[in-house]
Image 1 (cartoon, rainbow, N blue to C red):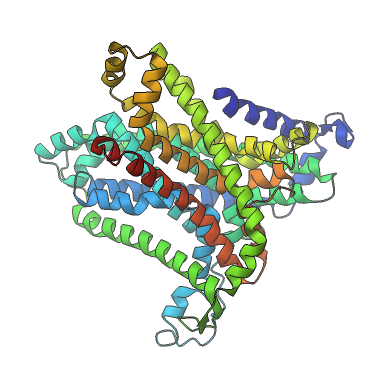
Image 2 (image 1 turned 90 degrees about the vertical axis):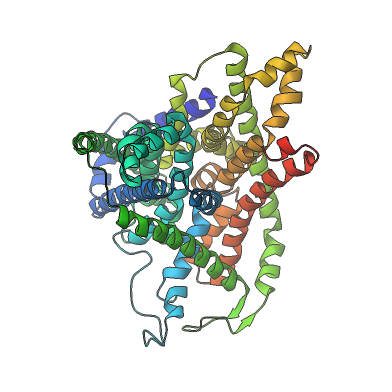
Amino acid sequence: MLAVLVLPVLAGLSATLLPAFGYWPALGGTHFTLEPWRLLLALPSLRRSIGVSLFVGFTTTALSLGVVTLLVAAFLSTRSFALVRRLLSPLLSVPYVALAFGLAFVMAPSGLIFRLFSPWATGLERPPDLLIINDPFGLSLAGGLVLKEIPFLFLMTLAALPQVDAARAFTSARTLGYRRVAAFAKVVMPRLYPHLRFPVLAVLAYGLSVVDAALVLGPSTPPTLAVQVLRLAQDPDLALHFEESAAAVLQLGLVISAIGVWLVLERFAALLWRQWVVMGARHCGEAWVRVMAPLFAIVLAGLVALAFSSLMLWSVAASWRFPEVWPRALTLETWRRELAGALPLLCRTLLLGVGVAATALVITILCLENEVRRGVPRASTLNLIYIPLLVPQVAFLTGTASLMIAMHLDGNAIGVGLAHLVFVLPYVFMSLSAPWRAYDPRYRATALLLGASPWRAFWAVRLPMLSRAILIAGALGFAISVSQYLATLLVGGGRFTTVTTEAVGLAAGADRRVIGVFALIQAILPFLGFAVALLVPGLLFRNRRGLRDA
């Protein structure tokens, strides 16, 4: 498993570092030089791109962590906590691109929000001349990423809460007279955050290097640094490959520096937090949190609902002019026309996603079963599963694409699938490892005492009892594979297209109906995966209530 995760990243980084310093014999670079860096640093928009990237990355991470902390502090150990979990959990399967398109249709000057208030409240008969989407500061991009990262951090928090015995610590603090938010902040959060450090750093790294969502919501003149790298990589002038590699290395350095800054800020925050904890205050903005936490949950759910409503309306709209709130006529003509040509694309995306998710499941299950058979405790080296999430994709995928060309694996399903596997495997492992390790070992011991072999105990006892967790991990892996844009684009060389690459390619077009169709297709695929993961155990074990509800 570690080889699948680490070796492609290291190989891709090496194939990026060498051209960054002028050495790549295939393109005539036979000696090391700093000329690529001189050309890169001469770009007039470079500083602006770096600044926007840093702003988006830190803003996304801070806001996402803050909102998740607020939600957990307000709803932990309450009946509403399950409702918040049901509202946020499905959002993890929504691809970034589909959500980005939906938000663009909602927040744009001609979007759904302005339509709802025009002309009766705003007096507008035409869309206002406002730069909301693709604003130069990356505010819309940061907002879109926050909507997507909150569910991720929330689910990572749910997985970490049992590991720190949060319920008992929270109850003990409450019995000592601390109010809800103060009890969480002073007792639970200091234990919880070390388990969230790697997911938080992954959010920071992704916010600094995101490409697909940046192409839809981010600034364009200049774009973020990651989009600059992609533009150089797609330039037909092969001489720019050296400059593009230097930009990719700069992106890697930017992410490493940002992570270092975040870790330093953690130290300062810990010192301040410790001083606040020992002060003994039993209140911590209880009234404010009681109002803001439900408001945040409602706003998040409302924005996502509006985003997908807008996508659905545009996909069936025959004519929809501003400021009309509802299309003049509805038609399925766009769906019929686009689905006829997109059917091969859809089948390719399905087969690729299922194959990659199944491969990731096999590797993960073998790794976890190996822990059980050998009695090996959780190794600290398993933190390496975060490497593909911490290293920016543009920093090593450009090098990986060059290596795929040398191995004649570019532009086909095998090469693209291997690239997807690097990003799918960490999520599958994180999803399945907790329920696998929490499985009661007495079930396996009972099967062995009854004469079953270790493999029979595995197939007949463990796998059926963990079938729901396995299928959900597979559905998550499928969703991650469907949403991969940069890996498909660079390793596929533009010859292997999926629904995601087609949807992002439509971002430059003006036909919102076609964009709505492809964005909805991309969003529907992961939901189908999770629907299968939830329905199959219920059908297979309909006569076994314990397994059906596990």
